[in-house]
Length: 275
Ligand SMILES: [Zn+2]
Ligand SMILES: [Zn+2]
Ligand SMILES: [Zn+2]
Image (spheres, rainbow, N blue to C red):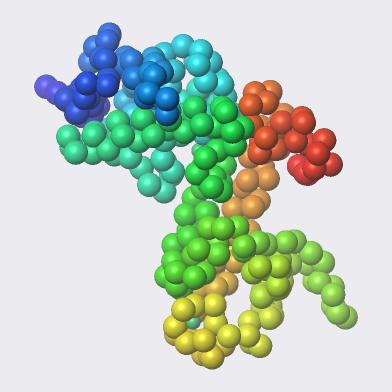
């Protein structure tokens, strides 16, 4: 009887091309040496260990963790156990249930290793703004993107470029109720108070691409969508803050990235940007 886990490794073996040297072939894991071409044409080799995780996905890490890459670095998408964060696993799992998907997986691994070489030199991740860190934050970010995407391309690209943000504050006015304020491009667009009262939306046009005149409450179901987007942003920020504070407690920075909040040099520059 063929286990489904083995099927996933079987697809990977079949999909491996000439740039992948398979070694140590066993039913429960796969070792491979990958040749990554540098921009100057020379080759770079990485030894990886691939193990099944669940029915149709795998985890991959360096065969010897910490050999060529940092053993852990959230900013370089290397998890605390040394495994690579190839996709946005929580939201877009790379399932390996066909030969075609297995080819896609190898391509993702090569892309990841190429970006590691670039990150090493540039001291930043080469794909623009990187994804939220930690599974809970990534989930919330995926939700926020789905909502923004349903409202329109403009809002989605603003979100992806980091132009939307949420800030916790104590309300002004007679009743000081704490809550969240949301900003687009530095301008406040919405307040959600802890008592459930929402302000700021009634005197502005909807954020969607459809009707630029209507307020969100008069524009389809967009008032609810904008509020849901705000709450997803809040969950993302809270989850990410928790992720970094735990990471800071548990792990030592590899110091290879200028954008990493755990890098002591970065913290000095930003006056300890981490709360
Ligand atoms: Zn690091
Ligand atoms: Zn990642
Ligand atoms: Zn609208």
